Length: 156
Image (cartoon, rainbow, N blue to C red):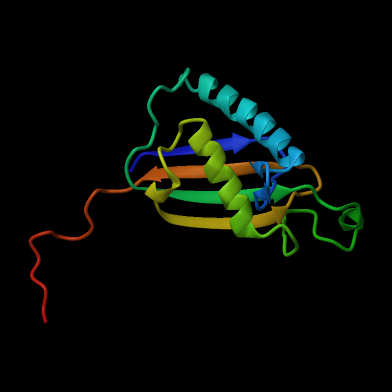
């Protein structure tokens, strides 16, 4: 199984609902700004790995993705009574909206052809350790094309 890890040094952000008006549909400016910045960082990571200007998607078959969203630690959590390492994040934004934002970003950068290719995924949100910056870590894994033995007989 071929695996790649992507580390995007940016504060995670959830994908908001699109705004619908009589003039059209749009996303909030803050989200569009975040997408532009994250896209620049991801494209820089792609160039570093030798994937310059992807014409075709890197993944066109079933894959598994593991997401880790590392959020900025709130100031009150720097007190000595709190654990110094990563702490599970149980507040907003919702995890599924964070995953959606990253999936859209990966499609925009031509890493995956479509987010429907993701056959398996795991995700978690954490607060950064005291010495850590916010980031998004995504691990992508190719999945085998068949599961089990195709010649196996089924018992009814």
